[in-house]
Image (cartoon, rainbow, N blue to C red; front, side, top):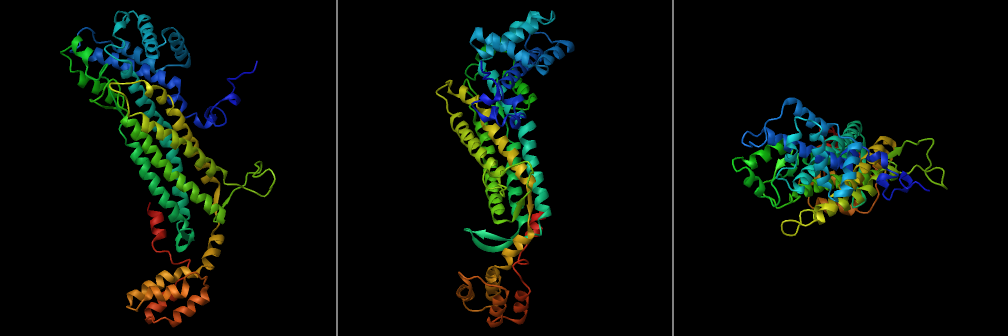
Length: 457
């Protein structure tokens, strides 16, 4: 019988062709990750109850008992996850299966056995789930996504510095425009990506531990002397999350929407970079290092295709589509809750997985490109008409009548060389100082502050 569990039978390339590229996210965004963070949440809530002086039904746990309970969460294994899934096949309820798993761990320790019914005390399943999803996203961000983003930024910074002074033609509307440097153009993307990365890194991740409809109903009946909002806040902040005091049964997922939008904004800048670099490779401004064992085309042996930037672009499209749906769907729920968010939340790994593949591919592409300053210099030397801008600017400064119109008549739609520009400068009504300043210019030196800006980012 065919082994359909083999990666070759995966329905999604995230678990097939690109499996290894998503490995950094699997501990957090998989079914295992969800179960592990549910256990973490239940343990921390139980420990908080025991540490709350006003909650008298539960005595303080010894340091050994606290370490034991945290150890259950920290050492959570695939085998533990399988145990919970086996229980779920009986309960048909995933969070209840986690509760039973932890109760069994308390029963196994005589000092904790009397308190097993305080596992999941006053909680609704969504208390555990929303905290777990927030933890999944926090750890995926901090331990996988941000390091991958930073690797791209570091490579871009290196390229921007090394190419800061390498002149190239700009293109606006696809047409030749004032010169810049390749380093400055890469620095533009570096600055944008860094801004989006930092905004994403600083997004709060809200969560709630406030009961069936968000009012601490059961909590207050059981122990009115406890400040339940304060206790919940301490637990959540201890996990690196922020307390949302205004919820229904579910935390409204606005924070997840912001998280998805943050990734989309970063991804859109990365997409813009991919397409520009693809274009510069096409122009010959970058060469790609050929890998001897690779094939560029099944019929054209000479080709070295920009497949990494194309792969990144395609995966960004998929990531954007999934993240967009998550951001659109999750903040909307009927009355105090409906279950349509549950199945959607199980696809967090899909959106983030495609983004991780895109980051990996972009980094791989950046590592293969080598600038060709001679090719850029050729275009500059064949495009002296781009000096029409500084010439008309100096004419304006010197009070010459209709400077723009003079240069438009002399240059628009024409290709000029050095000799043509020199002849033009001789007949224009310029001061000796203005003429000398313009005669010293070439397309390769008309760069403004490009180099300075490239190095400053």
